[in-house]
Image (cartoon, rainbow over all chains, first blue to last red; front, side, top):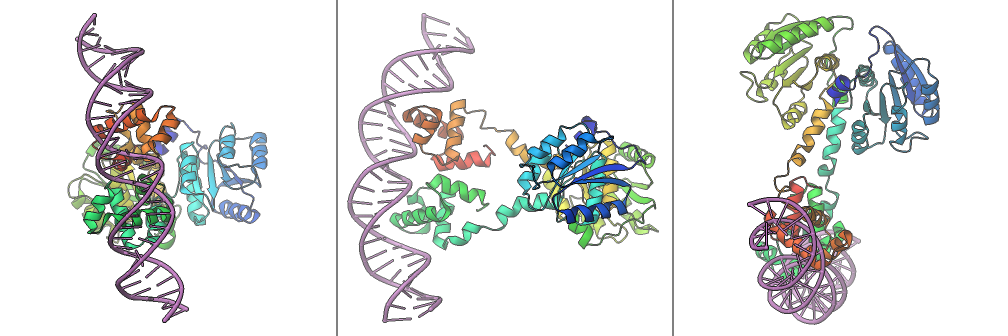
Length: 226
Length: 226
DNA sequence: GTACGCCCTATCCGTTTGGATGTGACGATC
DNA sequence: GATCGTCACATCCAAACGGATAGGGCGTAC
């Protein structure tokens, strides 16, 4: 989409050599101010700021020239999830709209990008990278920190919150469940009696919140177990 | 990593206002030449080219000034998978090394990025985006087209060899199975009687080669269904 | 020592599954 | 019109499952 957006959707690029008009909307004044200062210092950007979605909308509507890039805080007043993003994206004076957030998950980021956002900026980003990203996005590209997108991918697999809760036997039994084995088969594999397996099965259901063996298997699978 | 690489690993940035030295290594002369031309036209880049890994290595070794960015074709002579990438990355005169490929999969791209490559450029990228990406990477950021990374994620879900074999009802029932529902629940959801569900369950077992509902659910999951 | 947690086994009981088999309706194919 | 595949419903039955309950052994922690 990165490529296709710029190529197919024909995002207007700022005339080269001209200042880029950026709108930063974030309810944290400190972030607004420091970001403004840092960006203005770094490059030829013209910055406006707003403290909430309504303020941002008013500025975009009343702008005499379109903004090359609008940065929206994901969790500021009026955003209502990704609704605020979509609202601004529909406006003619906002060429590119990106999300910035300190808390949003990868899912949110992906959804935003899929919805056509110019990018996603976690607040953990160093200021320098942020400036790079802004320039990158203003040029019509789509940006998101790869490490953020990747790291979150493995976060589910990284720590097995429920794996810790299970005893060795329960884990072994759970593994059998993920293989679609019957209690009898599991019992044979582990050289135990079937009633024992049933016990482990029942207790591990409770621990991981499953109602039956299929759910248990799916939960294990989703946790990246086995 | 994008952020952390530039911040923590201290990639040297080209002195601002100075030309960026780029090395393009690709065995396709056509691509080399057109790319060279396009990039030279677009921005203040100084381009060298090589036709294979040995040529690239020689240029990097003998360079009087380090390259800001080295672009390596994934499938050119001498590369041997990601080994060539690692070789060049270890060399002092190559500040940033990126992969470029027309064939490589997302797995390769991810591995390269995880190994510290500056980026991954599929050859499907429009020339303009490519220049943007090059500038972006030369600034110390890590680049990969988000659509490429995302699209390939779903490629497993794209073709469902077994999904074709299942009728609509069977698919609906299978979906219920993956959610750990009982036949009765599925029947209620689909507004059918339980015996009907049992019929679909049995036939879909045969079609996908499952012995019980848990196996059916796991198979569906592995195929990326639902 | 006592208590606790994990592990193993067992029995009982009601529900769910898996399988076989049959009926019938509908649409597409031949 | 006959045939085939899909869908729907039904009955019967054996097996497996899920839950409750109740033992005993065994190690660690208090």
